[in-house]
Structure formats: C-alpha cells, structure tokens
Image (cartoon, rainbow, N blue to C red; front, side, top):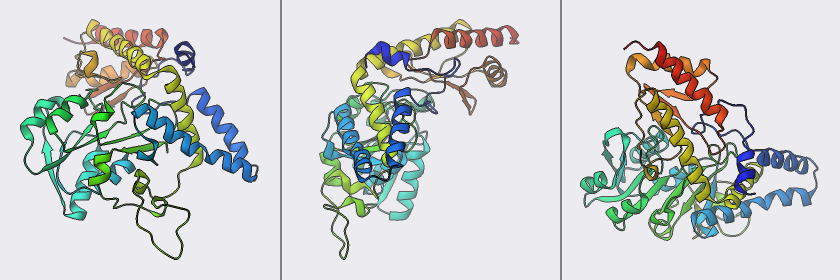
Length: 372
C-alpha cells in the first residue's frame, strides 16, 4: 500500500476529529475480520490454524516497527495489561507524572499498595509536559524506573525519549505509546518497555494491545502476573514450570486470534506506507488545526514545534467559552473530546479538506457569537 492508497482508505464521513479516542476500523481491517470469521466458523482445523498464524505475524511486524526482536514482543489485551505486567514486576522508586493517563497512575498506585516494594515518586509537570529537565531535577538515588507517555493524552506533548534516556542513565524507561504508536516516529531503542494498543491510530479495534520488553527489562522486571501461556513448551499439565526467559513470560493466556488478525493487518498497512510518511502527513494535519485555532483566537495548549507534538491538538478556551465552543463544533458535525475544560482535537493523516472546512466554520461561528 502506498501513501496515496493509505490516505484514500480513510472512508468515514466528514467531521471526525477524535482519533485520540477511537480509530474507526480501516477497510483492510474490516475485510480481514469478515474473512477470518468465516474461517473460524468452518470448524476446519486448517482454517483455525491459519488464523492462529497471525500471532507470529503480528509479533514480527511489531518488532519491525519497534526495531526489536519478535521474542521480546508479547501480545496483550490492552495497553493497561502490558503496563501492569511491567509495573507489578518492579521494585524501588518509580517516577511518573500525576497527570499521566490512568493506565499509568492507577496501575502504579495499585501495584505499590499491593506489593509494598514500589516507592512512587510523583512529578508535577507544568501543562503535563514531562521534559528531560524536569526528570533530571527530580531523580534520586532511589529511582529505579521512569514511566512516561510517548504522547500526552491531554495536551499532545510528544516526549523526547532519546533525551530522557540520556538523563536517567541505566534506569528503566517504561513508555505508554498508546497515543503515538503507528502515528509518529520515536526512538523506541531508548526505552526498556513499550506498551500500546491498535484501537486508535492503527485503526485495528480493541483487544489489539502489545508490550515490548528490552534486555534490561527482561533482566530486572519479575513476571509477577505470568500465566500458563508464559512458559516454554505446550500446555503445562501435572507440573508448574518456571516462566520462560523471553517476553512471553509477561502473558496470562492465549490472545484473541481475531483481534490479533486485525492488529497484523493494520500493522502491515503502516509498515508498507512507512511511519516517517505518516508522521510527516499527520504533522501537517495538526498544523492545519492550529492554523484555524489561531485564526479565531482560540488558545492552543499543544506545543508548536512539530517534533514535540503528535496528532493531538488541545484547545484551552476561557472557562465561559468551553460550552459555546463545544456546542458550535457539535452543531457543525465535528466530533472531538471535551474534558476538564479542554477541547481535544485529533485529526489523522486521512483527515480531508471537507472536515477541516467544517472545523473552521465551527470556530468562525463560535468566534462571531463570542462576547469579548
């Protein structure tokens, strides 16, 4: 699939600017679902086994996009499940921002309370930006790991993984890549754990999570939540073997093969187009959103530098303007996320001129009715 075909695959109705919440399934994913469902409905062993082959395919594609080895990739039901596998196996100081998505904050809090071996070191970043400078100032001799989102879910700030690695040294770097994987380029080699899911930017639907564990992570993180699928060999009966030495130790049970097929299909599309092209195109779309916000004097919280933002553009209107702005967007057929006084606008590479026109019209109508 080339870039032109990829752009044309965004076949939804105009007005959708909420890709950071959910990515409508791509045509190739929808086709794969129908074909695989028919095979699984046949009752033939050959068809069932064929669908099962998507597991290795998905892991290999993930490894290719991460620049890693497939043995280090474990399929998960969600991003949160992968983060739980990583965090519950930690010991010592874990540094993270209070403003992170609950997949990190709730998991860290529950793990610390249950195990008693984790010391939470909370950051209070301005605007939610977890910068290398902030982390450097907060590090202590007890810090053993730092957890951060690749792209902040509220502001769209893109973390500098390379700089964070330079700052933290050989401490573990755990990355929630939910809002960036498949949409932006990143130095995943700087991380030790990367967790994500395919139901947003990859357009693969829910249940398509994954976790990558680098060598340092495999050495230092205990597979506390390891299930029967995390052992070498086949079904372990009449004995309980030790967890395998690979990242498969960080799994509980076998994955949903239909979900894995959706993930593999979406990953193949991204691989064929190239994440560098997707990143560049998405940067243009977010720039378009910022252009309209500036034109109608709606404050933007998201960084202006392309390398410091992902696909999310967060508008921060005055308190009295949040309701009218949200209403104008809805009245013009625009779908966004409004939360905590912020308006999160998330285009994708296939967001067309018709959608951007509707967005501009909505902001124009809001601006004309605004009382200064």
